[in-house]
Each structure stands twice: as structure tokens, then as C-alpha cells.
Amino acid sequence: MSAPILRGWCPGAYRPMASGDGLVVRIRPPLGELSSSQAIGLADLARRYGHGIIQMTNRANLQIRGVAESDHAKMLDRLVALDLVPHDSRLDAQNIILDPLRASPSNDVQAKIAVALSEALHDPEPISLPAKFGFVVDTGAARRLGHISGDIRIEAHRDTLLVRADGCRMGRPVHSVTEAVSNALMLTRWFLETGGVNAEGRGRMADLIASGAVPPEPLRGTLPPNPAADPPLPGPTQNGYCVAAAFGQLTSDDLHFLADCGAPWMRLTPWRMMFLPIVELPMGFPRASTLIADPLQPLLRVDACPGAPACPQASVETRALARKLAPSLRPQETLHISGCGKGCARSRPADVTLVGRNGRFDLVRHGTAKDIPDVCSIAPDTVPDFIYR
Image (cartoon, rainbow, N blue to C red):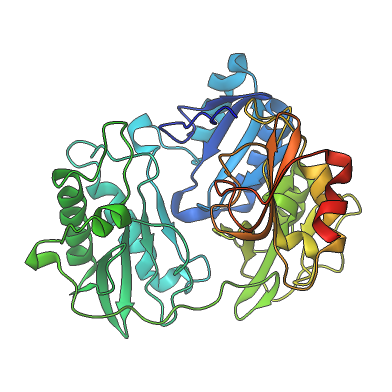
């Protein structure tokens, strides 16, 4: 079995990734927000230069697939004009995730932290970090991003801000936005100076902490963060509405529909949903819509990568099989279908994981795509027999 190729970087807007169906262009909207005009502009770009599909990622980013190399520069110019991509390419690789259900913009402490942190990471020169290294800003009374990947976390203990290295149980109390950003930068530099990045340019804070590294005394935590909350489900929330989509994929028409719902803005979430700060949505979705507002929809418990032929590393088609299997899932059962052994769509264990290999599937129960299979080399048309026999 040939090992999947591991990339040393994540795609961006300025540095897209080549795939089987063209370039993958990743967009990180400032503060994870889209205005109605930005959403409409993005939907039109996806239709004009891509396949008309906008992917929501588990980093609260968006991706457009299928962009031709000859169209990339034109698309990039439009993204910059929409203020969805920074003018400076060096600012495009930041991974800062905020709680999308946070308070209104009038007193948005998390936004203030994110803006200050973004500026500090590039003043005077950009700090070079591994591609997946990221920051989580989650200062609410209940942490909604407790299960979201992040290397440096700015959280709270009651009403006191904390800065915590991922992998450490306690966070360092700070007393202002400025102090929070300063401590986050010191932790970042400590990570780099302590050997957090390996020879291949990869590295995560939790791995460094697990190796026995201990932050210096001025950066050590003394208080636990507020308790974690369960992620929201599709449907109404306390201050708005969450809308999901099968496999995290929005069509251009779906994004147009959401932009026309009357919300002042919409926020991306790391749960592959859009949050709209409105009381209720219009009755029903468009007939061909991929949008999901039913928290019991089985497709919400299915993760599937694009598969073949969209991804050159995949040897199997994934999403048609996922739609076929979803209605047969048992209550609360999770399913992951991966086109290869990388497992890009889901890093957590699933109850059932199918991994493509040489045009067939390996079956892993209660594990990930990287675990040893329980059954190997299953023909695609016999997969249901092996899962449910």
C-alpha cells in the first residue's frame, strides 16, 4: 500500500493547491465574517471560476475548487476587491478562529483580540509558523471551541482573560487585550525557540508539551479555562440561526439564498455551518439546496472528502456512497469515508471509517483512517453488506 503524500502547507488564496479538478483556493475572511455583498460576490466567483461549490472547512475558512491556473490571478484580484483577501500575500496564512456565536459587534472583545493579534504577528516582519499552527479566541462563559484544534488559546476563567498553550491544563491570567496578545506572542516565540518545528517544517504546540517541554515561569498557567460547551446544532440558537450543508459544501445558489435572508452579516463556523444573527429563516430552502436545518439529518454525522477524481490521491468515489449509506446509520452513529489514508475530512475516530485503497475500501471500526483495518479490500458495491451484516 503506497503511503499518501503529506503536504507541508495548507492552501491559501495566494498559494493555492493543485488538485485533480484544478486549483483549491482557500479564503480566510477577516474575523470569519461575510457581509451580504461579500457572500454574493464570492458565490459569483465560485460559479465563474470554479465548479460553483464553496466548501466550509473545520478551520472556519472557505474553499473554491476547480479554478484554472489561467484564471487564478483574475479571481485573486476580485477577492482582494471584496476585502476577503489581504492586499499583502504575507498576511494570508494566518489561522485565527473566533467563537462565531459571540456577542454583538458593538462590544466584541474577541474581535479586538483577533485584530490586535493579526497585526502583531506581522509587526515588523511576519513570524514564520507551521502551516497548521493556529490561534483560538474563545473568551465566553462557556467555551464553544474547546474541541477545535488550536495551538495557543485565548480563553477566560470567569471574567478574567487567559492565555493557554494547547496541551496545558491551565492558562496564564492577563488583564487586557494588549496583555493577552503580548503573552500569545511570547508563547509563539517560545514554541519556535524550543524546537516546536521539525525538519519538515511541521509542528504543533500539544506535541511539544507532550514531549515534556514546559513553558517558562512567566508564561505558565495558574487558572483553568471556563467549562466547554457542546457545539451548536443546525437550527435556531439563542441569538440567531445555524445552517449546515452536506459535507460542508454550499452551492453558489445556497450562498445567494443565505445572503438574501436579511441578516446584517453571517459568520463561518469550525463546525462547517453558517451562523446568521436573525430570529428565523424564510420557510423552506430552495428545491435543489444542500442546506440543512434539521439537527437529526443523518448526513450531519457523515464526513467524506471529495474523493476521486477531484483528489489525485484518492482511488475511490466517496460522496455518492456517503449519501447512499447515511439513511442506514444507527442513531448517533458516525461515518467517515476517506478517499485515501490521509483522512483529511475527519481526524477524530468515527464509529465506521472507510478508507479507499486501489479502487476498493478498507473498513475501520471505532477508529481513524490511519488505524489498522478490521476488513480489507471491500468492493464498493458490497460495502453495505460488510458494515451492517
